[in-house]
Image (cartoon, rainbow, N blue to C red; front, side):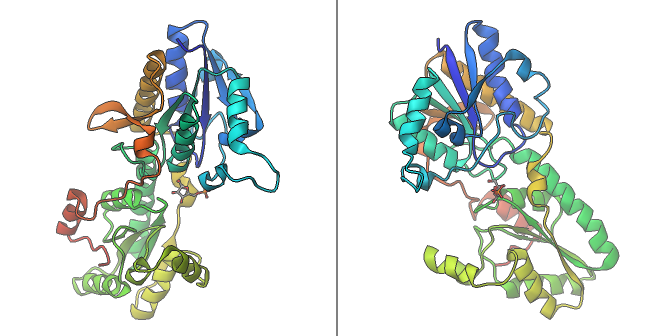
Length: 358
Ligand code: F6P
């Protein structure tokens, strides 16, 4: 049985990180009195720079419901991990050196896509790694759901609900921009749950004329307000044809604060109603996890502890249907789980009359 288990949380935080830490650590402490949990501070930064502390049993009290992460987190871009920068630090060697210095038997990494890429790299370098998939974006390959996602759906839905009533009162077009990075899961779920009239996701590039027509049609049908849920990563049809470099240049040359402001400005030229933009932003990532996420994160944590007990490494925990399972890190790292354009959910939403700006 592993005696010293490291845990780190990396990338953007999300609700459920503490519940997952607690899930792993409680099982380990329950089963093995002599085991020690080492909390690596601020994600891979702490592993590179050698900042850690012991996570005592008492540190686990009251954290099931606590948002954020008791270990701290940071963004350490994967593309820079193997690059020697100005500070001359060989980050990968430092991480391996600190893993050994901490005398770890294994390291549990809680994170999203970037975190999993680095976890896979460390695993290939010979470290014993177990991943746990967290992110509000729900874009990790190989798992149906990541923890943090459903809490964010709840909060984003409430944002849309609240905007709904004020849009109705004023006869306005309200655009709610929802996080989700390059995928549309969060916006799709919250948009459907919040009864959005138009849902724009990156997987279905939009045509502004289609959005304008959808708003005008609602007006003709006697609805003088509209709710448009826009994923922060939304792109239009022209942008979808651009290469990565051209797209970056094109976006940098634009003066809009975000994609919603750009849609709002085009829309406002064509409709009578006032158009407003609401961006909940990081609010959807903050605060206490929902019961769903507390349970999912706990189940993931417990599964990871069982893997540690069986010395199963180089894998990341996943939800498949209603079962908790695990995948090879090398099979999922670097792959993005996008919304399938022809999924039942998208087709169902269309059948309801929701416009996707096509
Ligand atoms: O990955 C989670 C996420 O909230 C994305 O939805 C969003 O694009 C990004 O992180 C925001 O990053 P930051 O917290 O660094 O501003």
